[in-house]
Image (cartoon, rainbow, N blue to C red; front, side, top):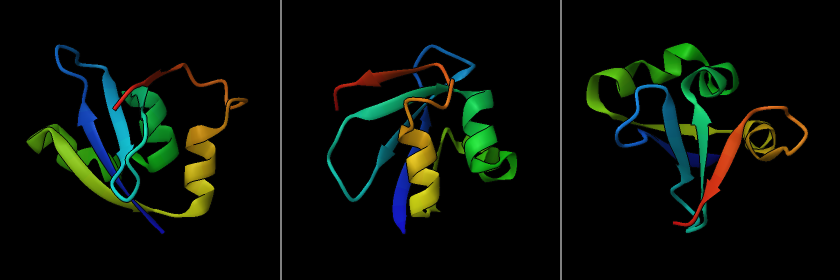
Length: 79
């Protein structure tokens, strides 16, 4: 299991930034719809209220997030 932090990208209403807590690596930026499909819409409810949410995700979810073939528009950002 991995701990993941999901935050809004500053100045946007439709993009989120995901970063693993355990590893200091690059963040992944996704549309909010893509993140909801991968993580579950209910898991993002707290982010709408507080601006950030911490989730625990399994290896399978992590693979789907990093999968280059997932056809999800994403941008890799330096930490």
